[in-house]
Image (cartoon, rainbow, N blue to C red; front, side):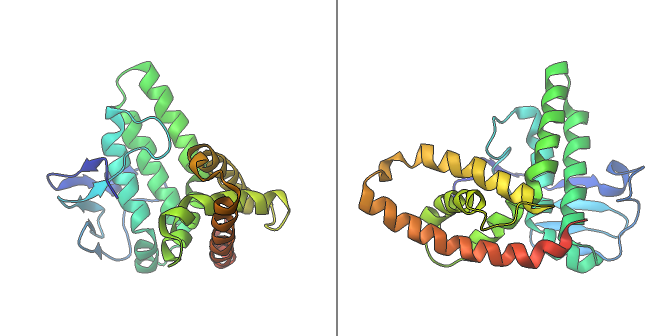
Length: 225
């Protein structure tokens, strides 16, 4: 994958300072250390040089959001590892990351329109972030289909929601909305597979991937607050 940004120097910040006054501060149960992310118990956080990320996903990107998306993407990427180390649910870690995004984006916004964008994107990650994370993890774990399934499985997900295969209640509502929205985008950008036979083959592959998605959804159901 071609990433948009490359972290050329180690990025340092304090989770405890950034999240002051919230339930996510000031101390964390255990340090989290891997090749890219280091979080000390007191909240000191490092994102190492060489880390790559894609900025704002699926929406127009802006330079003032670069640091906010760096922090958000790193925390999302290692959410399972952080959750295990701290005894949190993945949902809680992602919610913390969304608050990190919000506070960083608003701090870096200098113009009224930038503050409006920061608030809008914060609403987006809070509304859809968990569902998107679940779907992306499921697609990454599925060995077959690779790039094709990565987009068209979302179309299958939209179909599953429409047909009532996936319950559309509670946390599942988010997954349904994301599948429908991204599935529609997949259709727009996959018009090159409009030929009937090819489309049918891809759809079968997508449905197989959606089975894997549904399995992960069931496992993650208990993460919803």
